Length: 472
Image (cartoon, rainbow, N blue to C red; front, side):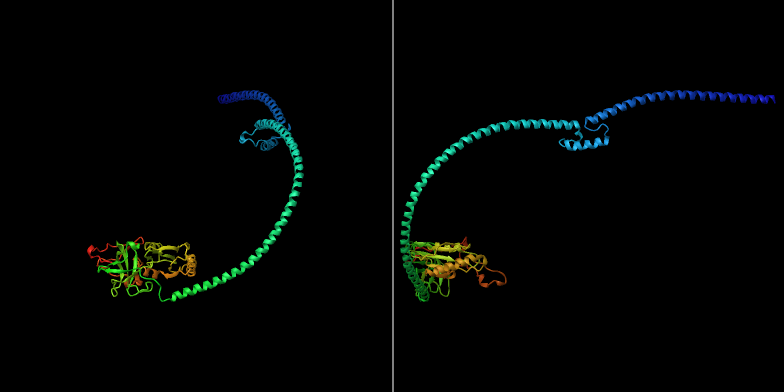
């Protein structure tokens, strides 16, 4: 039992010692922590006082800065920022970079502008001073000029007074001369009216004569149409006929004949060449002598062949005489629907004729129909609205020819009487084709000529011995 109590006492003692040690450690740690906290509190209090002093200094600096910038010392940051932005918009617009828009930069910009403005003002003042000097000089010169002008004006007034006196004298002389001229005009007017009355009567007489002559001219033209003969005689005759389609005529170089002249052929017993029935046509190929030429047959009728002694006649060519022609309307020789005006002109000139006037496709008349014009060749009447100008000139040329007594013939009559045979024409194919448009090609070597560029190319004429040539 005593041993057990000792053991309890030992345990209690150990616990007490352990608790005391713990209490001592805790007390030491608490004392140590309080000492460090107190030291930190003293340091913080010292730092607080320092910061408070710095804050007071910064506040004072800030208030001084606000006052320096023109704001109240106690103005809020928001007010300062708002007013600063407004100032930048108002005064800092000249600075392109917004990041560089500060009060100092604005002041530098304003100062630079002020210096530039001051320089310009000084320059303008200097220029103004120079202009003032120039103006003063101009005023001085103007004053001198005004004085000279005043002197000139006074002199001009004196001269004007003298001129007025001279003019008054001249006016009196002029009025007297005017009265004389008026009297002369009245006398001339009286004579002129008398001459007009006399001329009017003469004009009426001439107009009556013109009317009578025009009527007589129309009657003569109508009578001429009904005359049995046309007074057209043969130009020559056939001297000899060869069976190969070659003939010889009694015309040659002495008759001013040329190659390629065409003639129509009619019987020897017919004397009116213009109204005779044509039996064929020939074209001159060679000039052999003064009154001999060789020609080829371009058209004939086997039932009525060309014989020796037959007469030949050309509407264009005449021995020793150039006939004058005029062409009007649509000149279509070969019936292809295209104008052959140029070919007709060349044909007339080739046969020794002269074209006085012709109607072009644009409706203009080249040349003039005169009393020397022998024939007016009438082509087809233009039937298109596009050719209205040609229609008008066609009738105008026909009327002119009628008034001058120029004989009119149709294009087919002209071509037929001069013995020309168109070689090129339009052949329509298809259902409208005609059998006679496709004749067989002759095999006798006397093929028809081929048209090239509007002219006929003649085949080589048949040759014969010189001794066989007939005598004219």
